[in-house]
Image 1 (spheres, rainbow, N blue to C red):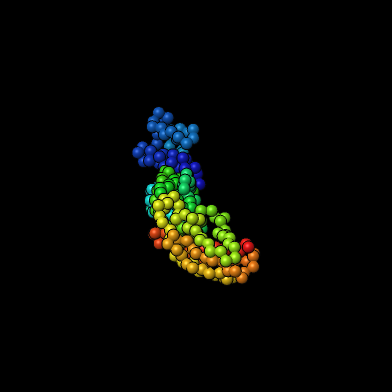
Image 2 (cartoon, rainbow, N blue to C red):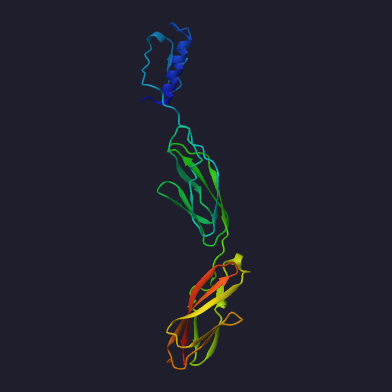
Length: 255
């Protein structure tokens, strides 16, 4: 097929012929082609090859900005092309221009995106993209994300804390497990944490007297267990917004 500019010249020349019927001499009307160097003065001797309808120029897609709301620590699938359009009916794909500052974008097999906020992040985030039809791209538009906070369960201050206590045979000890836990990230620092339960779960020989008024586990080591033995106690703690953590502690008998 001929170049689009040549086809456009031919279409313009045909229109010129319709407006100027009959032959013309050297001093008559002339037509100047723009796509190549040719001036026509003798219309009757000019042959115009016809290779069909000139190709249509591609129309760039139109992208529309998007807004999404999601919850802290929860990925969200984003179909950002759903409200974008292409006048030529071409299929569209996403071209990321700027990445989000507080999360990660993954491209799914169907072309949609999944946004995963950073751990414990809540607040605003955004990224920008263009819609592409494979030839042209749209203007760059923004996707605005509002990550809502969610209550987190109490967690160990030190993830490597093994929660191990020591006791001599026959010794009564008070175990402060709450001192090893935070109620959650910084925005939940004003929450309170309560010890709900404590139960023996492994090699239990001592006496477990429950939880005292200070939220400490009361335990007495046995006299009969040899040094080097240990006990295991499961416990449950809860913050004042109802998030629960279940964990275990170990008591080593040392003497």
